Length: 80
Image (cartoon, rainbow, N blue to C red; front, side, top):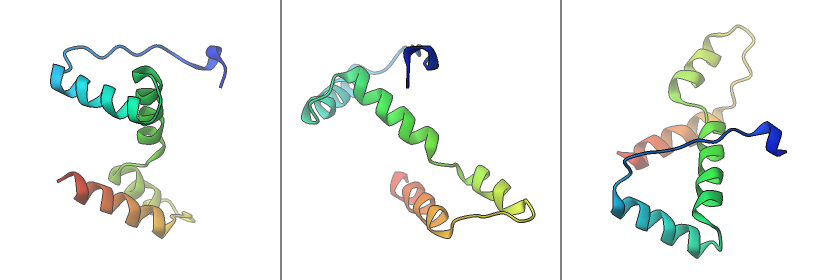
């Protein structure tokens, strides 16, 4: 990915304790906070939402991957 393929994102009003946790996690992985968050954003964007999975299932000839569906369900349950 080249710099021309990226756009800056600014997130405001993040609670200080959340920033500290994210910085610690980034440090544990030997990454800057920016690199850590960029990787997390990429992971989140690549993981389809339930609505996206549902929409795919409604399309005739869909190639919905059941393991992808199950993985997403488990992630949602873990967040609750």
